[in-house]
Image (cartoon, rainbow, N blue to C red; front, side, top):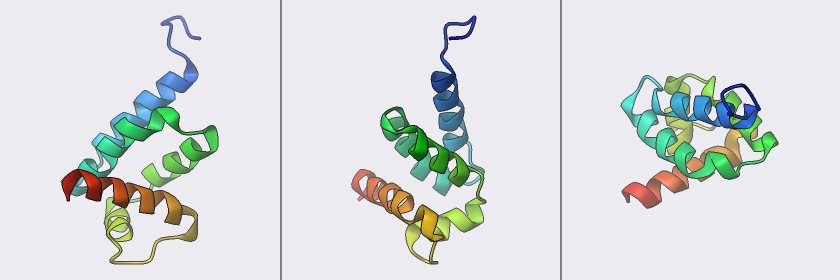
Length: 92
């Protein structure tokens, strides 16, 4: 735990939530932000590592991958399917 009383994991989750909400395109903000709020705290370290890598991708690639307009890289397939399903249940 740091001097501020925040664990490294808590700091990581906060950083990832912020990056999920401030993507650069509103569409990805609305997909990744709520997903991060709902799921990050329960993810394993390996799942967080993958989500962190996903956050490094460009929105111009993420959006078509998430919406199924373009095939996504195999390593993101399960995660992006979960993100897309989560968004559909929230927005119909």
